[in-house]
Image (tube, rainbow, N blue to C red; front, side):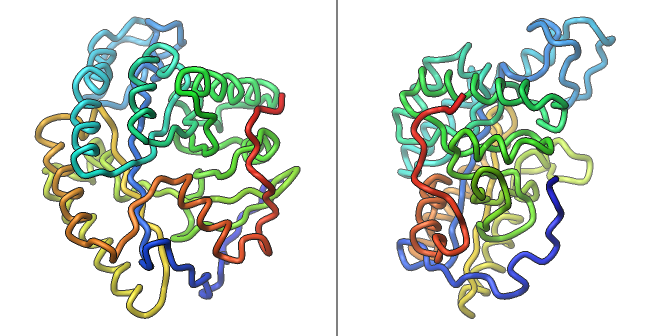
Length: 314
C-alpha cells in the first residue's frame, strides 16, 4: 500500500549542482493530448467538460464544440510552440497521450525529430486513479508505450498522467522499466519513492506555474500574469541558490491553451526570460534531469534503480 511521506528530505535536500554549474533546473513541459480527451464521438461514455467554456451539451451526446476547441491545439497551437522552441534552441519534454499519438503520428514524429522528449501521459487524458483493475491499467500503459515507440522511434522512459495515479501505478512503472515518474507534486527536487520490484525516481511536477490556470476561476486571465508568476518563482529559487540550495522549477503548457495567440505572448516572454538568465539556470528535458540526478546526487545510494530498460516487460 502506498504511504504518504510528509517529511521528504527533512530540510536537508541534496546539494546537487546541475550540468552547467547552476543550482536551479527548469523543466518546460508541453502536453500533447488533444485527440485523447474523453469524447462521445470517439466512443467514450462522456465528453471532457473542462475547456475554454464549460460544456453545455447533454450527457451522452457528441460535443462538436469541445472537439474543435481541442483540435485547435494540434492544428495551430503546436506549430507556434515548435517554431519558438527551434528559435530559442530549447529541447523540452512533451507529455504524450497514446491515442493522440496514434491518430496524429506525423505530428508526434515531428516533435521527437526536433529533439524533444516523448514522455508517457497515459493512453487517454484521464486520471489513472480511475483504474480499479491492475491488469487493465498495465495493458493501457503498454499500449501507450508501444504506440509512442512505433511512431517516434523512442521508448518513453518518463510518465505523468492527468491528476492522480491509482494505488498500482508506481509499481507498474517500476515493473515496466520506466526511469522516472512525475506524478509527484510534493517537492522541489527529485527523490526516491518505494515501488516494486525496485524503487522509482520521482522527478516532481507541479500545477501552479502552469497555463491550466487560465482555465481556473482563481488563476490567470492575462498572459502577463503567467509571466510574472514564473518570474516570481525563479526569483525565489535563485535567491535560495545563492545560499547553496538546489531546486527544480516546472513550467507547464498546453497546445490548446497557450497555443492561442494572446496566451502565446506568455510563452514568448518566458522563453526570453530564460535566455536572459543564461547559466544561472539549466533548462533541460525531464529525461536529462533524471539521468543527471541518478549520476550525481548520490542516487545509487538511495535510489534502487538499475540500468534503463529498453523494452516493455509484459
